[in-house]
Length: 366
Image 1 (spheres, one colour):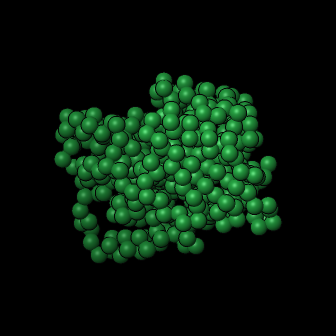
Image 2 (image 1 turned 120 degrees about the horizontal axis):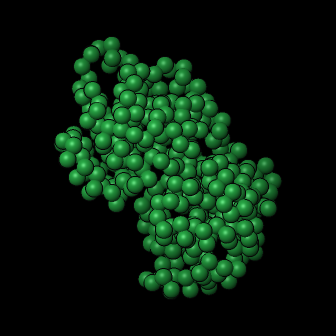
């Protein structure tokens, strides 16, 4: 299907490419995949850092100041190529497009990653910007939401009709987690003393992630545990102080941003994800690929993935409930291999590469 369509110039507009969080990874994966049939460029408004995407042109428009950068963006879009489709990657890029060339929305495709009710409530600055940009999405030639929760908010709050297309995942034919399951089953047979339970929390420390709830749950655990909290974030100092006040700080390893979380996922016994809001759930899907069980909040996106797509347990975001869910999930580990295989198969159906790219082709060709 993809090869039968006309070749386009697809130009993504992004504010940043580093550090590589979920949106940045999603952008590079999609751009690289589309470059197999189209001419693809990423316009980045700030220094993109090193990028390993040889089939994609990455152009930095950073001119040192916001006004000069917007001027460079205006000049670039005024010189639009034939059959060029501009894809605006979210609210922050949309805000810059609005300031530089508002007329460009009419021919652009909006690709929204971050709008949820909880995210809107997280800060006045983001909310005001989102309100303005989302109204501009009504003008766009098309709008793509990465999950149903984003699509629902766009429709109910701003009457923006969007197509739900999940982010492109790099899923091997067989999940690497099967090796973990075999290893853990052997370890359990050989020894009853495996040392402390290794808990992992992965993501930026900010209020929406509810890491304060996790810290308060730790003293309630009746197992020997250690926690690795990876991702850095604005709330880390506050969380360190809370952990010290509760007497658990010495059992927590605090890591900053981690470019490749795979070794952490492989080396852990449980991913704890008490977030109040997610738009896609990359962390959960990465854990599932490693057959690492998760405990997550019963909230939109998480409750669509867990347990059918991501094996694990849903709970409420309060310390006693979270502690109980952690202990009960650990008691069931290692999980039944057939359940893990079934979740693998479900992920591969829901995030099938050909289906995702075919949906994008439909949007890009109007």
